[in-house]
Structures are given as C-alpha cells and as structure tokens.
Length: 170
Ligand SMILES: Cc1cc2nc3c(=O)[nH]c(=O)nc-3n(C[C@H](O)[C@H](O)[C@H](O)COP(=O)(O)O)c2cc1C
Image (cartoon, rainbow, N blue to C red; front, side):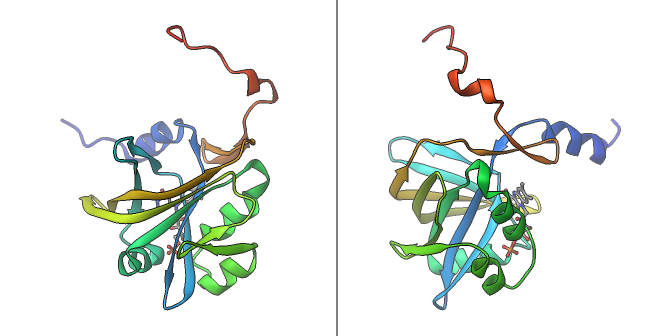
C-alpha cells in the first residue's frame, strides 16, 4: 500500500474544527505556555483532560518538571494570544503580551473562557508528540464565544450558531 500523502493528511485533519487553548506551567517561578488545539476531555469520573504536545515544545519540558499544568480556553477576542503562544519567542515575551495571573500554582491567561488546572498524569508516546493526561484539580468556566481553528485559520463561530441544532435524541 502507498504511504499516505502528508499534505492530504494535513488538509484532512485541518477540517476538524477545534477550540484553541494555552497550555501552561511554571518552571523556576517563570511561566511557560504553548498554544494547543489537541486538547480534549478524557474522563468524567475521575475528571481528566488529555493534551497532545510536540516533543519539541519547550512548555512540555516545563510542565513535566512542574507536575501540574493549566489549560486556558481562549475566547474569540484572544487570537493575538493564540498567535504569540504558537511562536518560539522567549517565554517572558509571550507572557508580557497578555494579562495573566497565577492560579493554584499555574499561570492562567486572563479573559479566557475557561480555566482548568490539572495534576500531571501519564505522558504516553504518540509519534512525534506525547499524549499528556491530567487529573482536574479545579475548573472555572464562563459563557462566551470560543476562538475556533479550522482549515489553518482562526475563526469565530457563525453568528447564528448560538442557538445550535438540537440533538435528535435530546
Ligand atoms: C492553532 C494552533 C494549535 C496548536 N496546537 C498544538 C498542539 O495541540 N500541540 C502542540 O504541541 N503544538 C501545537 N501548536 C504549536 C505550538 O503552539 C508551537 O509549537 C509553540 O511554538 C510551542 O511553544 P513552546 O515551545 O514555547 O512550548 C499549535 C499551534 C497553533 C497555531
């Protein structure tokens, strides 16, 4: 069988709309963070999250040492934060470009729609990424419009989508 086409793979997975988060931790008292969309809930009992991070992510190394991490779910007005946290700029530069605060031992991006603090669980192999699991220590959420990533672009949900479409079995 032919090797699957890399570009086609990127196009295919780019069709999955995702939320956008900043995954963060403290290292030697300094905040570190990366934009991450490979983030989802994993378990309800106990409450757990899952984050996939590149081996090359500097924030991954910090998070592993810290043993706890934060997930800031970005709102539609926070594209600049998503862009800066996706760079390899010095961490001090990333964090000085946003307002943030310490919350339960992790740095959190102010104005985010939801903030989830996790204790580090497993770090499992996943190709050029690792799969990080976290046990939820605390969670806060406010209603608001999320920042969405789709087809390589940051987007807002459609203005009319607030009503949603009721599930057939709801
Ligand atoms: C929309 C978007 C989503 C991203 N999602 C992830 C992700 O889920 N996991 C990951 O490792 N990198 C992801 N990245 C890339 C990282 O943000 C990028 O490699 C960043 O430079 C890592 O920063 P660090 O080395 O300071 O940790 C994403 C980038 C963008 C723009």
